[in-house]
Length: 216
Image (cartoon, rainbow, N blue to C red; front, top):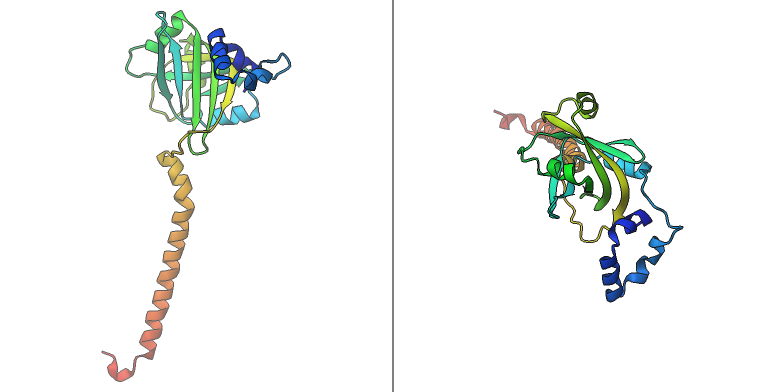
């Protein structure tokens, strides 16, 4: 946890509830002026972001309702532009444009990036800007992906937080599962090959030991 996160998330009503529940002192050090703000992307965050193939994104409507949507694409489609800026090509979906409409009224956005196999998650708060500039979109597009990018979403980061792994289930995509079992497959194939060789040797040896009169 870092100071930038507390400045956004610890509103007066949240602080009042922490006081009521007796947890206020647990987070006091993160609100201190000398605490690390953690509003810049470091090496660990950059690597983590570059390996994601999707994330959850929340926007807020002009009537105050939150809207959460999953944004997916090829691994690495969410790109780090600099230490405080990330961006992605927004691919055509159901064309309801709820997130885009919300961001046109309120540029606040929140992302949750999940790493289920390693039970990690990174939360990001920022302000999003929509661009339909073809050159900007082209820079974010990844070759070989069938999705049609309609716009670019550029996010200036206000805060980040590595969330605790408690209660995160371990899950694997088919690609991640294949990476895990590939060594087992290779070992199995090697054992099958060795078994076939041994069987051939035993058959040959058995044939050599069979008396001539018993042979067909």
